[in-house]
Image (tube, rainbow, N blue to C red):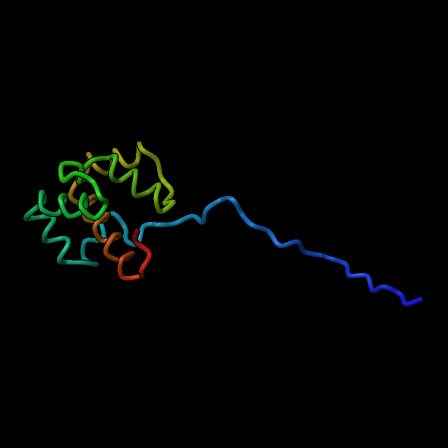
Length: 114
């Protein structure tokens, strides 16, 4: 009678239900990392807001809203809170909008924007 070999499994493969935590591609005050976006935000804020809203598939009037920033953070699993989104949008709306547009542009370059 042949002896069956016994395999001992020491590590089980695991699938995590928790999505990977993302991060902002640039900081809130990193305007120098993309002068084009910075100039557009400074001199044509409504145009940049419409670009961001269009990128997100939303109405042009929503581009500067806290909801857009919160939707984006949620979509890419970026840590933060609605209170932080509100503070960024109210205290420095141009910086918050430019950060969002820079992030969209970088994710597009990486093929990770949807």
